[in-house]
Image (cartoon, rainbow, N blue to C red; front, side, top):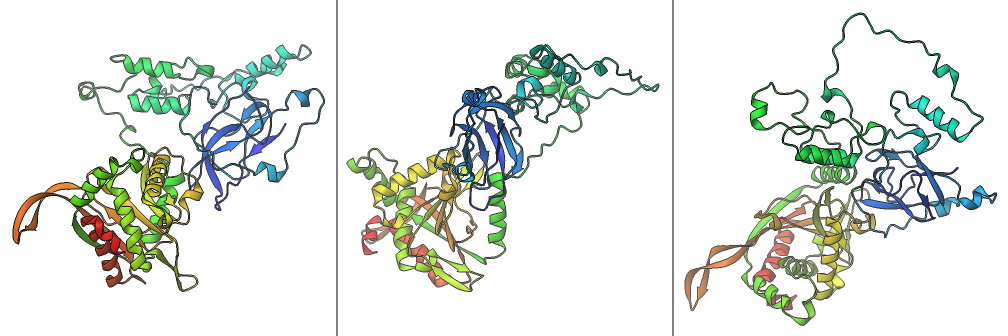
Length: 474
Protein backbone atom coordinates (compact mmCIF):
# COMPACT_ATOMS: atom_id res chain seq x y z
CA UNK A 1 0.00 0.00 0.00
CA UNK A 2 2.00 3.02 -1.25
CA UNK A 3 2.58 6.18 0.75
CA UNK A 4 2.95 9.47 -1.11
CA UNK A 5 5.85 11.42 0.39
CA UNK A 6 6.06 15.21 0.28
CA UNK A 7 8.14 15.89 -2.84
CA UNK A 8 10.83 18.47 -3.42
CA UNK A 9 9.09 21.12 -5.52
CA UNK A 10 12.34 22.91 -6.32
CA UNK A 11 13.81 26.30 -5.42
CA UNK A 12 15.88 24.66 -2.62
CA UNK A 13 12.88 24.34 -0.29
CA UNK A 14 13.03 21.77 2.52
CA UNK A 15 9.56 21.92 4.08
CA UNK A 16 5.96 22.87 3.33
CA UNK A 17 2.61 23.31 5.09
CA UNK A 18 -0.41 21.24 4.13
CA UNK A 19 -2.97 23.99 3.55
CA UNK A 20 -6.02 22.01 2.39
CA UNK A 21 -6.84 18.43 1.46
CA UNK A 22 -8.75 17.95 -1.80
CA UNK A 23 -9.58 14.31 -1.04
CA UNK A 24 -10.85 12.33 1.95
CA UNK A 25 -10.53 8.80 3.23
CA UNK A 26 -12.53 6.45 1.00
CA UNK A 27 -12.17 8.50 -2.20
CA UNK A 28 -10.94 6.64 -5.29
CA UNK A 29 -8.46 8.79 -7.19
CA UNK A 30 -6.57 8.58 -10.49
CA UNK A 31 -2.94 9.26 -11.31
CA UNK A 32 -2.22 13.04 -11.45
CA UNK A 33 -5.43 13.89 -9.59
CA UNK A 34 -4.85 16.81 -7.19
CA UNK A 35 -4.83 15.55 -3.59
CA UNK A 36 -3.86 18.65 -1.59
CA UNK A 37 -2.54 22.23 -1.61
CA UNK A 38 0.77 22.95 0.09
CA UNK A 39 2.36 26.28 0.97
CA UNK A 40 6.10 26.62 0.65
CA UNK A 41 8.20 29.65 1.45
CA UNK A 42 7.51 30.79 -2.11
CA UNK A 43 3.83 30.15 -2.85
CA UNK A 44 0.90 27.74 -2.73
CA UNK A 45 1.30 24.69 -4.97
CA UNK A 46 -1.09 21.89 -5.94
CA UNK A 47 0.19 18.33 -5.49
CA UNK A 48 -0.99 15.67 -7.96
CA UNK A 49 -0.96 12.00 -6.94
CA UNK A 50 1.54 9.63 -8.59
CA UNK A 51 -0.68 6.70 -7.55
CA UNK A 52 -4.18 5.49 -8.37
CA UNK A 53 -6.49 3.76 -5.91
CA UNK A 54 -8.51 4.33 -2.76
CA UNK A 55 -7.37 6.89 -0.18
CA UNK A 56 -6.94 4.93 3.05
CA UNK A 57 -5.31 7.56 5.29
CA UNK A 58 -4.42 11.23 5.39
CA UNK A 59 -1.20 11.17 7.42
CA UNK A 60 -0.74 14.93 7.96
CA UNK A 61 -3.49 17.24 9.27
CA UNK A 62 -4.19 20.58 7.65
CA UNK A 63 -2.08 23.42 9.00
CA UNK A 64 0.93 21.22 9.85
CA UNK A 65 4.38 21.89 8.40
CA UNK A 66 6.43 18.83 7.48
CA UNK A 67 9.82 18.17 5.92
CA UNK A 68 10.34 17.01 2.36
CA UNK A 69 10.19 13.21 2.26
CA UNK A 70 7.54 12.90 4.98
CA UNK A 71 4.64 10.54 4.06
CA UNK A 72 1.48 12.64 3.78
CA UNK A 73 -1.15 10.28 2.32
CA UNK A 74 -1.63 6.52 1.99
CA UNK A 75 -3.32 5.20 -1.15
CA UNK A 76 -4.54 1.61 -1.47
CA UNK A 77 -4.32 -0.57 -4.56
CA UNK A 78 -6.88 -0.01 -7.30
CA UNK A 79 -9.38 -2.65 -8.46
CA UNK A 80 -6.92 -4.12 -10.93
CA UNK A 81 -4.35 -4.65 -8.22
CA UNK A 82 -6.97 -6.12 -5.87
CA UNK A 83 -7.90 -8.70 -8.54
CA UNK A 84 -4.31 -9.90 -8.70
CA UNK A 85 -2.69 -7.49 -11.11
CA UNK A 86 0.54 -5.88 -9.99
CA UNK A 87 -0.03 -2.24 -9.03
CA UNK A 88 1.92 0.26 -11.04
CA UNK A 89 4.76 1.73 -9.04
CA UNK A 90 5.91 5.11 -10.32
CA UNK A 91 9.59 5.71 -10.80
CA UNK A 92 11.24 8.39 -8.64
CA UNK A 93 11.41 10.60 -11.71
CA UNK A 94 7.65 10.24 -12.28
CA UNK A 95 6.91 10.89 -8.63
CA UNK A 96 8.79 14.19 -8.76
CA UNK A 97 7.13 15.29 -12.02
CA UNK A 98 4.85 17.96 -10.57
CA UNK A 99 3.14 20.53 -12.76
CA UNK A 100 3.86 23.81 -11.00
CA UNK A 101 1.88 25.68 -13.61
CA UNK A 102 -1.38 24.55 -12.05
CA UNK A 103 -2.83 27.43 -10.04
CA UNK A 104 -3.15 26.61 -6.33
CA UNK A 105 -6.44 27.07 -4.50
CA UNK A 106 -6.84 28.12 -0.89
CA UNK A 107 -9.26 27.31 1.87
CA UNK A 108 -11.08 24.09 2.63
CA UNK A 109 -14.52 22.56 2.76
CA UNK A 110 -16.58 20.14 4.72
CA UNK A 111 -15.16 17.19 2.81
CA UNK A 112 -11.71 17.57 4.42
CA UNK A 113 -9.99 15.10 6.71
CA UNK A 114 -10.82 15.34 10.40
CA UNK A 115 -8.08 14.89 12.97
CA UNK A 116 -9.22 12.16 15.37
CA UNK A 117 -11.57 10.27 12.96
CA UNK A 118 -12.35 6.59 13.76
CA UNK A 119 -9.69 4.14 12.72
CA UNK A 120 -12.15 2.16 10.57
CA UNK A 121 -12.71 5.35 8.51
CA UNK A 122 -9.16 6.52 8.09
CA UNK A 123 -7.20 3.32 7.52
CA UNK A 124 -5.65 0.61 9.68
CA UNK A 125 -2.23 2.16 10.43
CA UNK A 126 -2.68 5.91 10.66
CA UNK A 127 -1.28 7.41 13.85
CA UNK A 128 -3.83 9.89 15.21
CA UNK A 129 -5.39 10.99 18.47
CA UNK A 130 -8.12 8.63 19.75
CA UNK A 131 -11.08 9.47 21.91
CA UNK A 132 -11.74 7.34 25.07
CA UNK A 133 -13.15 3.94 24.07
CA UNK A 134 -12.07 4.31 20.44
CA UNK A 135 -9.80 1.22 20.62
CA UNK A 136 -12.65 -1.04 21.69
CA UNK A 137 -14.92 0.40 19.00
CA UNK A 138 -12.25 -0.21 16.37
CA UNK A 139 -11.80 -3.89 17.37
CA UNK A 140 -15.54 -4.41 17.31
CA UNK A 141 -15.69 -2.87 13.83
CA UNK A 142 -12.95 -5.22 12.65
CA UNK A 143 -14.87 -8.19 14.11
CA UNK A 144 -17.95 -7.16 12.17
CA UNK A 145 -16.01 -7.45 8.89
CA UNK A 146 -14.19 -10.67 9.94
CA UNK A 147 -16.57 -13.24 11.52
CA UNK A 148 -13.63 -15.29 12.70
CA UNK A 149 -12.32 -12.50 14.84
CA UNK A 150 -13.77 -11.57 18.20
CA UNK A 151 -13.13 -8.52 20.34
CA UNK A 152 -10.02 -8.83 22.49
CA UNK A 153 -11.08 -10.19 25.89
CA UNK A 154 -8.50 -8.12 27.70
CA UNK A 155 -10.58 -5.01 26.97
CA UNK A 156 -13.27 -6.35 29.31
CA UNK A 157 -10.76 -7.44 31.97
CA UNK A 158 -9.09 -4.06 32.51
CA UNK A 159 -9.18 -3.19 36.21
CA UNK A 160 -11.07 -0.15 37.28
CA UNK A 161 -9.05 2.84 38.32
CA UNK A 162 -10.36 4.45 41.47
CA UNK A 163 -10.44 8.23 41.57
CA UNK A 164 -8.05 9.90 43.99
CA UNK A 165 -9.50 10.53 47.43
CA UNK A 166 -8.87 14.26 47.24
CA UNK A 167 -11.44 16.24 45.29
CA UNK A 168 -10.01 17.72 42.13
CA UNK A 169 -11.11 20.87 40.40
CA UNK A 170 -12.68 20.16 36.97
CA UNK A 171 -11.00 21.78 33.99
CA UNK A 172 -12.56 24.96 32.74
CA UNK A 173 -14.29 24.71 29.35
CA UNK A 174 -11.64 26.96 27.82
CA UNK A 175 -8.92 24.50 28.92
CA UNK A 176 -10.46 21.57 26.99
CA UNK A 177 -9.26 21.06 23.40
CA UNK A 178 -12.47 20.84 21.37
CA UNK A 179 -12.40 18.60 18.31
CA UNK A 180 -13.17 20.55 15.13
CA UNK A 181 -11.85 20.92 11.60
CA UNK A 182 -9.56 23.90 10.82
CA UNK A 183 -12.23 25.62 8.64
CA UNK A 184 -14.76 25.25 11.47
CA UNK A 185 -12.28 26.73 13.96
CA UNK A 186 -11.70 29.71 11.68
CA UNK A 187 -15.43 30.20 11.23
CA UNK A 188 -15.93 30.14 15.00
CA UNK A 189 -13.17 32.69 15.46
CA UNK A 190 -14.64 35.00 12.80
CA UNK A 191 -18.16 34.75 14.29
CA UNK A 192 -17.02 35.08 17.91
CA UNK A 193 -18.26 31.62 18.95
CA UNK A 194 -16.65 29.80 21.89
CA UNK A 195 -16.13 26.21 20.71
CA UNK A 196 -15.81 24.91 24.28
CA UNK A 197 -19.44 25.85 24.92
CA UNK A 198 -20.70 23.51 22.19
CA UNK A 199 -21.27 19.74 22.47
CA UNK A 200 -19.94 18.18 19.28
CA UNK A 201 -22.51 16.47 17.08
CA UNK A 202 -20.21 15.47 14.21
CA UNK A 203 -17.97 12.43 13.73
CA UNK A 204 -16.35 11.35 17.01
CA UNK A 205 -17.91 14.27 18.86
CA UNK A 206 -16.54 17.03 16.67
CA UNK A 207 -18.17 20.44 16.38
CA UNK A 208 -19.75 21.02 12.97
CA UNK A 209 -20.11 24.14 10.82
CA UNK A 210 -23.88 24.07 11.31
CA UNK A 211 -23.45 24.16 15.10
CA UNK A 212 -21.17 27.19 14.90
CA UNK A 213 -23.57 29.03 12.60
CA UNK A 214 -26.50 28.22 14.87
CA UNK A 215 -24.58 29.41 17.91
CA UNK A 216 -23.68 32.65 16.17
CA UNK A 217 -27.35 33.26 15.37
CA UNK A 218 -28.34 32.62 19.00
CA UNK A 219 -28.60 35.79 21.10
CA UNK A 220 -26.57 34.35 24.01
CA UNK A 221 -25.53 30.68 23.76
CA UNK A 222 -22.13 29.79 22.25
CA UNK A 223 -21.38 33.43 21.49
CA UNK A 224 -18.78 35.85 22.79
CA UNK A 225 -20.19 38.02 25.56
CA UNK A 226 -21.33 41.57 24.83
CA UNK A 227 -19.78 44.59 26.53
CA UNK A 228 -22.57 44.59 29.14
CA UNK A 229 -22.11 40.89 29.89
CA UNK A 230 -18.34 41.31 30.26
CA UNK A 231 -18.81 44.17 32.71
CA UNK A 232 -20.89 41.96 35.02
CA UNK A 233 -18.22 39.26 35.47
CA UNK A 234 -14.43 39.02 35.85
CA UNK A 235 -12.38 38.98 32.66
CA UNK A 236 -11.41 35.47 31.53
CA UNK A 237 -7.71 34.71 31.37
CA UNK A 238 -5.92 33.47 28.27
CA UNK A 239 -8.36 35.06 25.81
CA UNK A 240 -6.89 38.54 25.37
CA UNK A 241 -4.10 37.59 22.97
CA UNK A 242 -3.77 35.41 19.88
CA UNK A 243 -0.53 33.96 18.54
CA UNK A 244 -0.10 33.24 14.84
CA UNK A 245 2.85 31.13 13.63
CA UNK A 246 5.24 32.81 11.22
CA UNK A 247 5.65 30.44 8.30
CA UNK A 248 5.41 30.04 4.54
CA UNK A 249 5.46 33.14 2.38
CA UNK A 250 5.40 35.52 5.35
CA UNK A 251 8.43 33.88 6.94
CA UNK A 252 10.41 33.95 3.71
CA UNK A 253 9.56 37.60 3.00
CA UNK A 254 10.40 38.66 6.55
CA UNK A 255 13.84 37.06 6.39
CA UNK A 256 14.48 38.55 2.95
CA UNK A 257 13.65 42.05 4.20
CA UNK A 258 15.95 41.66 7.22
CA UNK A 259 18.79 40.45 5.00
CA UNK A 260 18.30 43.36 2.60
CA UNK A 261 17.96 46.06 5.24
CA UNK A 262 21.15 45.04 7.06
CA UNK A 263 23.38 44.24 4.07
CA UNK A 264 22.62 46.98 1.51
CA UNK A 265 23.04 50.63 2.57
CA UNK A 266 19.69 52.17 1.65
CA UNK A 267 19.25 55.74 0.46
CA UNK A 268 15.75 57.09 -0.22
CA UNK A 269 14.93 60.17 -2.29
CA UNK A 270 11.53 61.79 -2.79
CA UNK A 271 9.89 63.90 -5.47
CA UNK A 272 6.39 65.38 -5.69
CA UNK A 273 4.89 65.31 -9.17
CA UNK A 274 2.02 66.99 -11.01
CA UNK A 275 0.48 63.91 -12.64
CA UNK A 276 -2.49 65.67 -14.24
CA UNK A 277 -1.40 64.90 -17.79
CA UNK A 278 -0.84 61.25 -16.86
CA UNK A 279 -4.41 61.06 -15.57
CA UNK A 280 -5.65 62.62 -18.80
CA UNK A 281 -3.66 60.04 -20.79
CA UNK A 282 -5.15 57.20 -18.74
CA UNK A 283 -8.66 58.39 -19.54
CA UNK A 284 -7.87 58.59 -23.26
CA UNK A 285 -6.35 55.10 -23.27
CA UNK A 286 -9.42 53.63 -21.59
CA UNK A 287 -11.53 54.66 -24.56
CA UNK A 288 -8.93 53.68 -27.17
CA UNK A 289 -9.82 50.59 -29.20
CA UNK A 290 -6.50 48.91 -28.38
CA UNK A 291 -7.09 49.11 -24.61
CA UNK A 292 -10.83 48.59 -24.22
CA UNK A 293 -10.50 45.04 -22.89
CA UNK A 294 -7.50 45.54 -20.57
CA UNK A 295 -7.05 47.41 -17.31
CA UNK A 296 -5.46 50.83 -17.72
CA UNK A 297 -4.28 52.71 -14.62
CA UNK A 298 -1.63 55.27 -13.64
CA UNK A 299 0.53 52.30 -12.54
CA UNK A 300 0.79 51.27 -16.19
CA UNK A 301 2.16 54.69 -17.19
CA UNK A 302 4.57 54.67 -14.22
CA UNK A 303 5.82 51.19 -15.13
CA UNK A 304 6.51 52.29 -18.69
CA UNK A 305 8.26 55.43 -17.42
CA UNK A 306 10.57 53.31 -15.23
CA UNK A 307 11.43 51.00 -18.11
CA UNK A 308 12.37 54.00 -20.27
CA UNK A 309 14.35 55.72 -17.51
CA UNK A 310 16.40 52.57 -16.85
CA UNK A 311 17.87 52.94 -20.35
CA UNK A 312 19.63 56.15 -19.25
CA UNK A 313 20.61 54.82 -15.82
CA UNK A 314 21.41 51.10 -16.16
CA UNK A 315 22.87 50.99 -12.64
CA UNK A 316 19.30 50.95 -11.33
CA UNK A 317 18.86 47.57 -13.07
CA UNK A 318 22.06 46.01 -11.73
CA UNK A 319 22.98 44.35 -8.43
CA UNK A 320 25.96 44.04 -6.12
CA UNK A 321 27.40 40.50 -6.04
CA UNK A 322 29.11 40.40 -2.66
CA UNK A 323 30.60 36.92 -3.11
CA UNK A 324 32.22 37.71 -6.46
CA UNK A 325 32.89 41.37 -5.61
CA UNK A 326 31.30 42.42 -8.90
CA UNK A 327 28.45 44.63 -10.06
CA UNK A 328 26.20 42.63 -12.39
CA UNK A 329 24.45 44.68 -15.10
CA UNK A 330 21.29 43.09 -16.49
CA UNK A 331 20.43 43.69 -20.15
CA UNK A 332 16.77 42.86 -19.52
CA UNK A 333 14.20 44.16 -17.03
CA UNK A 334 12.11 41.73 -14.99
CA UNK A 335 9.71 44.25 -13.51
CA UNK A 336 8.42 43.29 -10.06
CA UNK A 337 5.13 44.54 -8.61
CA UNK A 338 4.73 44.16 -4.85
CA UNK A 339 1.30 42.73 -4.01
CA UNK A 340 -0.36 42.26 -0.62
CA UNK A 341 -2.09 38.88 -0.25
CA UNK A 342 -3.91 37.17 2.64
CA UNK A 343 -0.82 35.01 3.20
CA UNK A 344 1.73 37.84 3.11
CA UNK A 345 3.59 40.14 0.72
CA UNK A 346 4.72 38.67 -2.60
CA UNK A 347 6.64 40.29 -5.45
CA UNK A 348 5.97 38.54 -8.77
CA UNK A 349 7.66 40.02 -11.80
CA UNK A 350 6.96 40.49 -15.49
CA UNK A 351 9.72 38.82 -17.45
CA UNK A 352 11.42 40.98 -20.12
CA UNK A 353 9.02 43.84 -19.51
CA UNK A 354 11.34 46.24 -21.36
CA UNK A 355 10.64 44.43 -24.64
CA UNK A 356 6.85 44.77 -24.37
CA UNK A 357 4.51 47.25 -25.98
CA UNK A 358 2.24 49.31 -23.77
CA UNK A 359 -0.67 46.99 -24.55
CA UNK A 360 1.38 43.87 -23.76
CA UNK A 361 2.58 45.43 -20.52
CA UNK A 362 -1.01 46.22 -19.49
CA UNK A 363 -2.05 42.60 -20.06
CA UNK A 364 0.96 41.25 -18.15
CA UNK A 365 0.43 43.55 -15.16
CA UNK A 366 -3.27 42.70 -14.99
CA UNK A 367 -2.66 38.96 -14.99
CA UNK A 368 0.23 39.19 -12.56
CA UNK A 369 -1.61 41.17 -9.88
CA UNK A 370 -4.82 39.11 -10.17
CA UNK A 371 -2.91 35.85 -9.73
CA UNK A 372 -0.99 37.25 -6.75
CA UNK A 373 -4.12 38.39 -4.91
CA UNK A 374 -5.63 34.92 -5.34
CA UNK A 375 -2.53 33.40 -3.75
CA UNK A 376 -1.69 31.40 -6.88
CA UNK A 377 1.67 32.93 -7.81
CA UNK A 378 4.21 30.21 -8.58
CA UNK A 379 7.86 30.27 -7.43
CA UNK A 380 9.19 30.84 -10.95
CA UNK A 381 7.14 34.04 -11.22
CA UNK A 382 8.82 35.52 -8.13
CA UNK A 383 12.44 34.73 -8.97
CA UNK A 384 14.85 36.69 -11.13
CA UNK A 385 13.43 40.18 -10.53
CA UNK A 386 15.63 43.16 -11.42
CA UNK A 387 13.58 46.25 -10.39
CA UNK A 388 10.42 46.62 -8.29
CA UNK A 389 7.51 49.02 -7.92
CA UNK A 390 5.41 49.06 -4.76
CA UNK A 391 2.09 50.87 -5.08
CA UNK A 392 1.03 52.16 -1.66
CA UNK A 393 -1.29 54.70 -3.28
CA UNK A 394 -4.07 52.09 -3.46
CA UNK A 395 -4.26 52.36 0.35
CA UNK A 396 -4.46 56.17 0.31
CA UNK A 397 -0.85 56.55 1.50
CA UNK A 398 1.27 59.40 0.15
CA UNK A 399 4.62 57.55 0.06
CA UNK A 400 7.09 55.52 2.14
CA UNK A 401 10.67 54.30 2.39
CA UNK A 402 10.61 50.88 0.68
CA UNK A 403 13.17 48.13 1.32
CA UNK A 404 15.07 46.80 -1.69
CA UNK A 405 14.35 43.22 -2.68
CA UNK A 406 17.40 40.91 -2.42
CA UNK A 407 19.19 40.59 -5.75
CA UNK A 408 18.12 44.07 -6.88
CA UNK A 409 19.46 47.58 -6.44
CA UNK A 410 16.40 49.83 -6.34
CA UNK A 411 12.69 49.94 -5.59
CA UNK A 412 10.21 52.74 -6.36
CA UNK A 413 7.30 53.60 -4.08
CA UNK A 414 4.23 55.03 -5.85
CA UNK A 415 2.00 57.15 -3.61
CA UNK A 416 -1.65 58.10 -3.93
CA UNK A 417 -2.78 60.59 -6.57
CA UNK A 418 -4.91 63.31 -4.99
CA UNK A 419 -6.26 66.72 -5.98
CA UNK A 420 -4.15 69.50 -4.42
CA UNK A 421 -3.52 73.19 -5.03
CA UNK A 422 -0.57 73.63 -7.37
CA UNK A 423 1.29 76.62 -8.76
CA UNK A 424 1.26 76.78 -12.56
CA UNK A 425 2.40 79.41 -15.04
CA UNK A 426 -0.16 80.50 -17.61
CA UNK A 427 0.51 83.37 -20.02
CA UNK A 428 3.54 84.37 -17.98
CA UNK A 429 1.55 84.58 -14.75
CA UNK A 430 1.62 82.26 -11.74
CA UNK A 431 -1.70 80.82 -10.69
CA UNK A 432 -2.82 78.38 -8.03
CA UNK A 433 -5.03 75.70 -9.56
CA UNK A 434 -6.18 72.22 -8.48
CA UNK A 435 -4.02 69.46 -9.98
CA UNK A 436 -3.55 65.69 -9.62
CA UNK A 437 -0.46 65.37 -7.42
CA UNK A 438 1.51 62.30 -6.35
CA UNK A 439 4.77 61.50 -4.55
CA UNK A 440 7.48 59.09 -5.69
CA UNK A 441 10.10 57.65 -3.33
CA UNK A 442 13.13 55.75 -4.65
CA UNK A 443 15.30 53.57 -2.40
CA UNK A 444 18.60 52.42 -3.91
CA UNK A 445 21.76 50.55 -2.92
CA UNK A 446 24.34 53.23 -2.21
CA UNK A 447 27.27 50.83 -2.60
CA UNK A 448 27.23 51.27 -6.37
CA UNK A 449 24.29 53.58 -7.14
CA UNK A 450 25.45 57.03 -6.09
CA UNK A 451 23.27 60.08 -5.49
CA UNK A 452 23.73 61.42 -9.02
CA UNK A 453 22.50 58.21 -10.66
CA UNK A 454 19.59 57.73 -8.27
CA UNK A 455 18.52 61.36 -8.65
CA UNK A 456 18.73 61.26 -12.45
CA UNK A 457 16.59 58.14 -12.64
CA UNK A 458 13.95 59.57 -10.29
CA UNK A 459 13.89 62.88 -12.18
CA UNK A 460 13.43 61.06 -15.50
CA UNK A 461 10.46 59.07 -14.17
CA UNK A 462 8.91 62.23 -12.72
CA UNK A 463 9.35 64.07 -16.03
CA UNK A 464 7.42 61.39 -17.92
CA UNK A 465 4.57 61.43 -15.37
CA UNK A 466 4.37 65.23 -15.62
CA UNK A 467 4.38 65.11 -19.43
CA UNK A 468 3.95 61.64 -21.00
CA UNK A 469 4.91 63.10 -24.38
CA UNK A 470 8.47 63.51 -23.09
CA UNK A 471 8.79 59.71 -23.31
CA UNK A 472 9.59 60.28 -27.01
CA UNK A 473 12.95 61.70 -25.90
CA UNK A 474 14.11 58.40 -24.37
